Length: 368
Image (cartoon, rainbow, N blue to C red):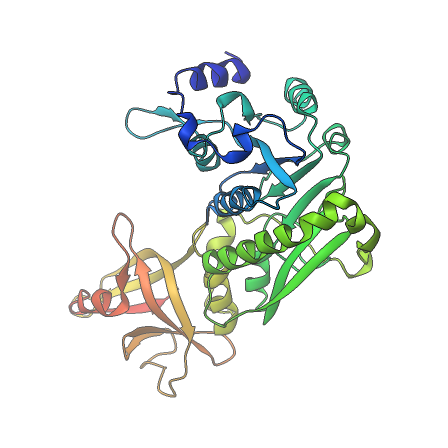
């Protein structure tokens, strides 16, 4: 069965939402407001697209608003739960709750599908907005909205172009990042910059928290700049990126998630922060029975860390993992040490280092 047919059948079974719950932009078919189409899909770390959509819909209902959100584009419904029920994406669910009819919620597998492009073109949107959409937009799409397609990108472009700008910035240990509002072009994250805002980065913030912050600021930046985008002045003030200063932020992979304690502690700490949520960071240790000398390997996810400030972090041997003030202390490269405060054992819930250490009972840990 083709995906478009399946999706139409899925939405045909959704109970119509009463007109009283519809957004004001959908109640008034005759409007002088500019038509805006929103594209977003949930992130594996944070449903940032949902937050951006909410803010856009709320702003569109203001008496002086110059735009209305006329359609939503998101990923197709997926089967979830024990019954494998076909369920809309969180963005699609919010759209339904806010009064969008199923025919105004587009769910193409790819943004280049001819039927999708034809239906979108028929709506005659003036501007499109993308937020963590994760789907390549072809030239045919970009030609549809006369005022352009605007993307919220969570970095100070041209730094960290790509799929994982927040994670790669944290992995690099940056002290400052930001969010950029750019016109979308065919080259990845390379369009002219309309506006940007800088954000200080705390040494302990993890990717999900930073992602929420940046997209929150990005949505506010978008709403402030929409009047200039609509009247065309944003095109005049937008400045091209310096491609010579561009850096890349490739997609994360599960193979990258392993921690090597030969590296310095600060490198490992930044990786734990960057990979929080998905794919996470993993470590292996040797568990030694002090009575029998029997050894076995144990694998777990590392959830929370900090760089060690204890002078007595080393055990009897250089590979010993010790326990100091509520933390598992791993000796690392460069005479540094990493404190592991929380871990996740396979099939278990997140536990503190204290709870894990208390459960060892006559065994000690060595790093691999």
